[in-house]
Length: 387
Ligand SMILES: Cc1ncc(COP(=O)(O)O)c(C=O)c1O
Image (cartoon, rainbow, N blue to C red):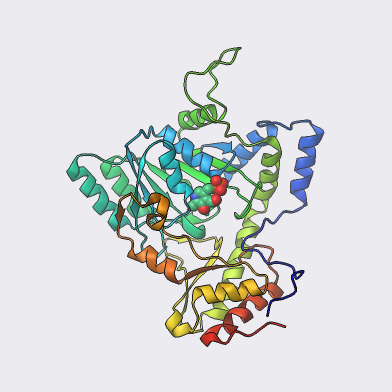
């Protein structure tokens, strides 16, 4: 039975704003800095790079824009290959295609669900044998968890291939004592509405290399040459973050540690309540780092649980609760079907069994209890209705 349509919807990962954000936005209005660029953009970049412990940051209109610029910065040319995790959102690979490059997909390992270093090494070995190495490697930190950089970095160094770290989903996570986003030549983040902190839409590109970040800012502001008139010697983009959105970002950054703890508490609640059920598993937290649990992802073995992930998703939807399948591996996406993949079975298996549960930092314990009760009720096809 469907709940009444006016019951408050529980979203997968909604924005969670406080009062500081609106005070900072009001300041932007009052000072008339309603522009792309302005003092909040500069301050957001400074505060963000301080938080991460990285030298330079450029605030951009989206994580996808940051990925696209990283391809430009690394000089990806038409026909160049770029390695990319297959278990990811489409924009990790789209950015390669924007520059005419060709993604080569690599499967996940099971400890973190991120790019498998053994398969990466195999692929690069093969490429070297054929005499043409990829131009870059994009490693994704999925669902709030770092990839295994102690293994990935030496491989990239051995073949002298720059690493781009797509940490769009993993702001605030760590690998050892270092924050995610700081391992590559370039790191990127997203402040899209569903991320752990949001500016409604926005992104950041970070690097230790000052010249690279300055080049990113130049390309992101239409590649305007230093001349009093408008002069352009290369193709640029309109990719900068506005001063108003940067004001939101500054407020959000201050509450990031609380948001991480709230999401980890959600995970612990789900784990306590659901891990005892047959057939239910969770995305592992690899021993090498600390995950933010941006999203709590479970796996459901339908034979032992007695219901498929889709049955569980629809049961939650009947109660106006949003859950989502995990990312469909990119090598299975029609748009990327012509590109090479190494491995694939691991991410395909996670895709067949995975489900992302509501994970917002504003979820109440009552919400969590309802969600758990509905999921438990789907076991063995016994779809109970919450009162
Ligand atoms: C792994 C990953 N990379 C890149 C992006 C793109 O970020 P944006 O939506 O800010 O363009 C996202 C999600 O939005 C993502 O999940």
